[in-house]
Length: 130
Image (cartoon, rainbow, N blue to C red):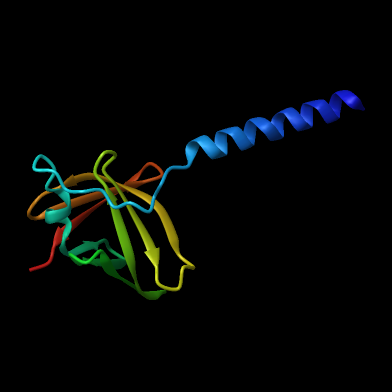
């Protein structure tokens, strides 16, 4: 019984150590460097379409965003704030009501006309709306 308790406590300590070392200070928004104009390119309206749905993101220079999802089965609208971490090319979104936190979206590619976001092994290509 002592062995199980020792193993359990050891696993708990390892999990706590991993959890604390994995967290970083997410409160500081990264400064844009001259080499990284991703944030400047990101600002604007982006649309993704497939056969069944349309998604639209509007990223604003004040770090706010709006999101719209329209399909035959569901419609969603959301507002919130975003953060961009240039050292990792990661975008995080937090809804105003804080119920839909998306975690991290990787910015795979961004240009004047195209934005590619990835999460959990999936990627979506958005086209800038005119």
